[in-house]
Amino acid sequence: MRKLKIEKIVSMAMAAIMVFSMCFDAFAVTASATLDTTNQAVVTETETIPDTGTIPETTPEATPVADPTPRPTAEPTPRPTPTPEPTPQPTPVSVCTLCGGEGHTDLDCPNKCKEHGTAHLDVNCSRHITCSLCSLTGHEIADCPSQCTEHGTQHLDTDCPRHSTVCTLCGKTGHEAADCPSRCVQHGTRHMDKDCPRNFATNDNVYITNYQVVDENGNPLAQVRPGDKVIVAVTVIDERVRAEDFGNLANSAQTDRIHATMAQGAFTIPYSGNIKARIRNNVSVNGTSGSYNALCYTIEFRDVTYLGGTPDFSFSIAYTDYDSNPLVSNNTPLPYPQKTLSLSVTQATDDVPAPTVILNSANYGKVAIIGEPFSLVTTATNTSSNLELDNVSVKVVLPAGINMASGNSQVLVGTVGKSGTINHTFNLIAEGVANDVTSLPVQLVYTFEAFVNGKRTQFTSTQDISINVQQPTRFAIQSVTNDAEMYLNNESYISASLVNKGKTTVYNVTAELVSETLTAYEVEFLGNITPGSSSEASFDFTASQLGTSTGKILITYEDAQGTETTMEQEFAIEVIEEPVWDEPMYTEPAIDEPETSVSPVIVVGVLAVAAAGGFFFWKKKQAAKRKAELEDEDEDI
Image 1: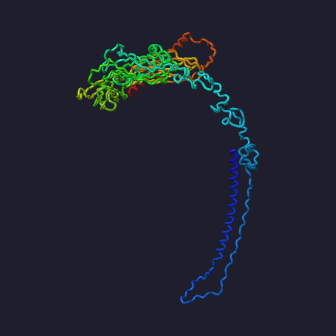
Image 2: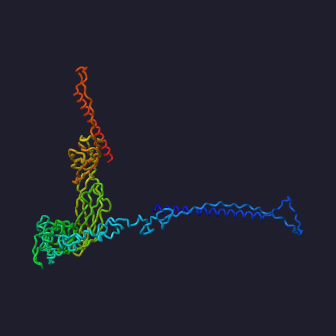
């Protein structure tokens, strides 16, 4: 259709050009005739003056007298006007805008739509289209009146699953259990909401039944002083939650579905992961709907530091749901409001009037690599809940081998509130340490002032930490050597050259060949490789299929911290069929030589010795070359 319209436009443009050309020719003829007439008029008006060859004398007193004899006027000779030749006029041709054909218009086009006229060609009419959804003609799938009112053109409305799906939870049709409006708001599709066990527990009591304060070995403590680290175990009964609703967990079972958050006050805990919850035997209580077993559990707060001041200990609790394992949380909150519980630790005794600063954490990572900057992040706490600290400063005292990478070694913090925290980060770098791994002592010195007994007193608190430093590991696969081709089901050889360019030993080095089409015979254990040393891992292997086979050499080792690292190097080898050699038939020659000729056995032996010698020479040359390369690399280091 588009092509026909283009042809029509081109035809109309050609006709317009022809008309323009005819008008231009007529205009040119008219202009030429007008120009000739104008030139003739100019010639008529011009007089002819005779040339006498002398200049007449003029007499001033003479009066000019008119010549009574008129002069004759030359008549112009008319020029013939050219007659323009007639230009042939093009015969107009009708072009149809519908089909692009000539000799007719769109009104009398034989191909126009029999139903919609000149709107489109009959072959393009929608009444010939077949719907791929209902198989009827006259419309497309997007306009199908039988499409699903919910899912559109995915299927017919009569085939929609909503007409046949039966909910396994409520028994009604039109939805599945996951979309059931009657499912439990707390446990989902486990049961209907009206059947949830929580509807049978109406008591709102949450309380502490007992607590214990013990040391890290589990021994009960009769007294806790500021700075002591203890374990506080608190037993809680929550009558809002039925034991069977929580999964009927066994006694002493540890679960992460009970979430406790300890308030930081007189008691502080550095890490929320030190809080664990264990289920205790169920406790029978009486509710408005009868007796039931309420949820009972013990929360253990480990690595708690008593800072002094008030003996108050408080925390909040919340619960989450589970999927298949009732011990494991799925992080979906249960619809029980968070509760905050508190108790007074009678063992806590604050008989130290002076405040102090205790280091809560000092983090620099697992190990500091020599030559690489690292950050020492420190957090300390004012142990006094009654006194503020003024002019607080912190200074890092570094040993030989650790220096400041940037910043100052001492900073002024300012004022720290009651039970406040002191946070600071020091940017350090380990340098000039010769050992593989060593632990270097670092001190943090906190200086501060406080009003004690009515006067300002200066105090100092020194906290010791250790930083493990390690040489950087520079262990690498230097090269892999193997044949370019091998015969199918025959053995080939590959070797990997390893070099330790660093200053620290790598431990438990093993080498393994891994491939889907190549088979090696063993995993090679290379042991420990000291600094500046090299080693080689070699494998004999066979190929099980023709073509290009690929594999990897895996080198696994441990650093001084026991961290395991794996390096890999890929290789490829072309596997071909072993050729079949045509051996000529042997004919024993006549014996003309004396019996002193060399025996074939001796010849074979000599060839074997020569081959062994050549192989030994090649290996020695390769070793010398590798040694020279290592020496060059060591000089670069």
